[in-house]
Figure 1 (cartoon, rainbow, N blue to C red):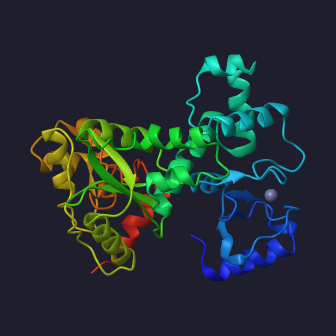
Figure 2 (cartoon, rainbow, N blue to C red):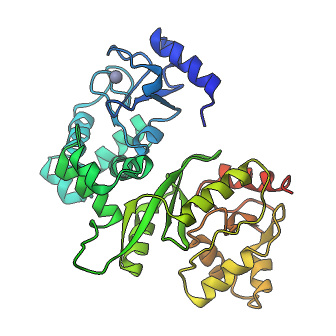
Length: 348
Ligand SMILES: [Zn+2]
């Protein structure tokens, strides 16, 4: 997270085109939807239109596209033709999921693309395209716009690509003549980065960090299982989890009471419930968890059920570590797992 003080510092660096800040931050301009490096030659935006990000990936996920003048995704003047070509191809069809065949059609070698993107941006081309696609959908969730408003105000986005990118992830807009369930999705900023919450009026179905690997598939599975369309917005359950997360990160709340919808097999539900019985500030090993549910030999299955948790933090899968005391895995990233475990030691 960028604090106010840093924001002021970054803004001064931006105004002065201070090259010492290259790689320290990226500035995203809400009025244009573009993000830039600090030294961009373009006219400088007003501070109230600036959002600052420490990595390009965060700016992409927040729904911004790279500036064509300062090319924030590459070291100055060092971008290859191949990268230029592929970035342009993504902007043309942001909804697209790339396959080897698409690369062949552009006469691009997939493994060269992967290597060059990795080297320049720290992510592969497919990850880049996914981040951009997610970003477009997430931007709508973040702004809370209704689908129709968004369709009317597509502005700089290519309109069909924009709609397709959203509906590919969140589902087609609900059709009034059919009885489709509608879930709402909302963006929640937290100490550990932005999260997305998906809920109906009564219950929370999903809570994840927006940069979590595999989130796109997770949302799709939820949608298909429930036969639901997802539109940006807030429900009572979302307002409740927002308030609770805020108190949790302030260190004032340790037990969540937002109603949860647990979508899983009986075994998974048993594991998730027993996760919620681990007191905050404590950890268990997978073996201990397997013993706790009376299936001491089901260690691996317990670990898998743990990984399938879709309600991060509230169902505290971060409280499970390896038997040897190492942190083990975490879908949201190990830095977050460590933070959560440490943070919970000081909860009431
Ligand atoms: Zn720029």
